[in-house]
Length: 177
Ligand SMILES: [Zn+2]
Image (cartoon, rainbow, N blue to C red):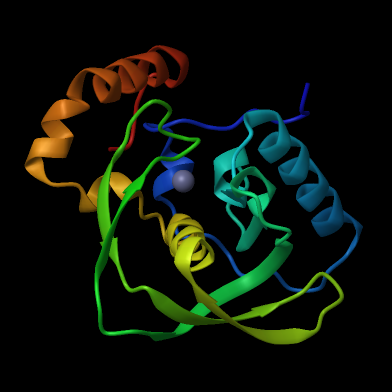
């Protein structure tokens, strides 16, 4: 079992703006390792550090579940360019299990980030990589894909969403919507 559980909707950490990462040290490498384990266990394609309860700007991507080789850990990722279009896609989130809905996002982006070796890079992304990067970077800003759903999609998922909130209310005594 992964050392850290994936935190679910209602937990306040998911609504916080995460702090930038400074030096890449042992602590940061250990967080990335924990994130990799959690992502593999949940069979997801991307994870942001707040999803394991760490409010720092770290994102990992592993597209092997969608048949691609792409695997990366990004520190302080920032979108520096977005195409003007807006493309629909059915999104889900490991922190909001069993909830799905259509989210419109630009189809092409450029992301500036630091690698784990401290190198600055710019990634040009389209298709699934553009999608997952935007979703994960949103997590670092306290934003969730739920925020973009139509009233119809929200209604369709209302029961599952309230069940998650109820679970966290019991566990934490309070929730953040
Ligand atoms: Zn997510």
